[in-house]
Image 1 (cartoon, rainbow, N blue to C red):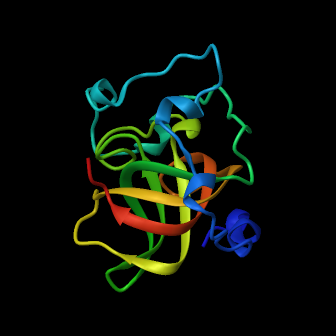
Image 2: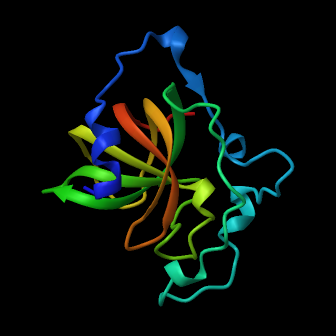
Image 3: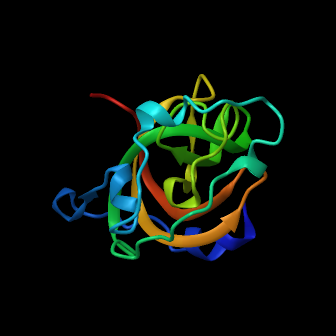
Length: 160
């Protein structure tokens, strides 16, 4: 696990009541007054497979409104740390293929997820809904800079 998240993940799951959970959309993570590119068109940027991280656009900052709160957010998994076929750490991104097949979104559109109970996944870019303790973090993975972190309490496949 990324050293920057060790203290955050140590907080552990909050076991929040359903009524205490804040549902977030990706646009909620952008500071007010800043531009947000909808996920439908983010993946349309021209790309090649080399140096995706170097093509990450700058972040306009992060929002601290939900630091220390239990949130739920859905997105696509970008695997980082494995235990067999189970994930212990991953980035959650607003669109499929982020950081690997297309340049990563700004740091304020990536959430670094850690989990004590590894999450079983069949494919790399599964959509998932993650609930847990949320906060801002300024860290870099091998794929991108990340602006938020989430200590997962539950991870479930995304369902409409």
